[in-house]
Length: 313
Ligand SMILES: C[S@@+](CC[C@H](N)C(=O)[O-])C[C@H]1O[C@@H](n2cnc3c(N)ncnc32)[C@H](O)[C@@H]1O
Image (tube, rainbow, N blue to C red; front, side):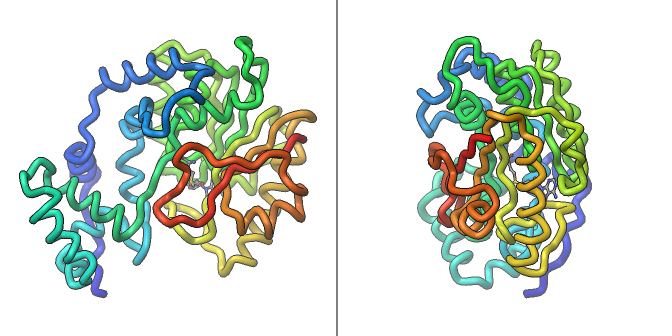
């Protein structure tokens, strides 16, 4: 396929992102207050509840659209090269289906239609909902005082849902590590917003390779993270590994070993990973998990056996 590289400016990208999701500041303020009200009862919310997602999208949706999926293309590449992609029968069929059936009343603009088709035919770059993070953060401590966690470590921080959740729950401290430096600005703005909304959570963000962090200098009693799964999505600025073995030996093993080693005794070590990583890396390194569960609607676009595994340190 002859893919032309998109060359939208930042402004163009923001404009397109707004045409897909037009989220107001008022809306995200309301959603943050709702999350605070839900608090430790996040587990009672249905998997369809999306409260808090708009906060994440308000700050980092454009960066999500820049993440490459199948064919090594992101959403912007996809729309720029739509004529090329139309040559693929399943994409052409999908476009026809939207025109004749799904969007026959023209309620969705072309950017929304193409986003939905991108999600189905290329890759859906999903977020973990802030409500899911809240549920996991409070899963093993359901009393009003919420004595634990005191400090969360999230060494593959991603789009920001975790820091929203930690703040809404008033968890004293959140440490996030993220290699994608392009998320620096979105996090800066997100953290300022959370402060303006009265959050007392101390947030420490490190934009660096989590393999290079000195965990002996950090104090944390709870780890929850969702690392990349082998080569499914291509996050910006991520290191490319030769094959699965290379990624096991030079990414998952040293990263899980170091972050687990410095977790406080009695703390929870929780990973959202697929079965393959659990079996190949985690069991030999950490033993059989103390708890295994799925979070509500955890299936990403492809069903590749994603679960949440918990070990007590
Ligand atoms: C599956 S995503 C996390 C998404 C997150 N759970 C969410 O919903 O927002 C994995 C993240 O790990 C980051 N990452 C990959 N390698 C890393 C590394 N060596 N150090 C720190 N972060 C890394 C990627 O840039 C990506 O943002």
